Image (cartoon, rainbow, N blue to C red; front, side, top):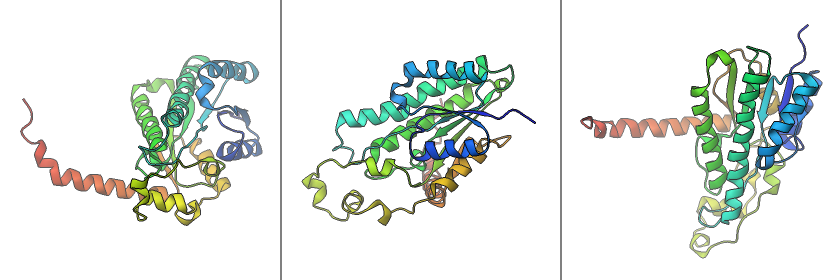
Length: 263
């Protein structure tokens, strides 16, 4: 029988990370889990990866899961908090990403490669009023990952998938807070941010079961030829279809404007 896979998961203390780690252990596979935010993983990553190699000799799957969120209108979110979201969700994830690619190529047995699962979101594909900086961080993660997927040599046997779930019940939603209201926005109760601010998330989203969702993530790590983008949840699929339809409509309507621009 093949040896059990070795997984490396960031942000595994709560929520999706913990649920995925528990599932992996139930499958009799090995988990190396970090509970610290990836914002501080620039120095921690090489150390944690090296300890995993010393203990198990290889890493088969890396899951870039840790993340944070801030809610509020773009002009109202405190800049320091906004930068912290980007620092964690993009730069922190990128630190882990680079170390994962290096490890798969240079430290794993030759040709073994590895799987990199990037915990993005359907909000890495489409915007959402009130979540601008979370959205921006996921858009950035999507862009850097798509670029990376084009840059790596196929002979390294590294497979990358952007996980793009909809609303999954986790601890993150309960931790986000809103900045104080601004009269310019408060005066229009129909604005989507006001509906979110004064309502409950459950009034606007359909929560997915955490366990069933991480089962999809686990399955994604076993696909021989995995997709670069994997939408998870009907809300994510519907949002992507609307974005594609809107973009297609714009392309068709204004395609002629691009004629005759070549030198």
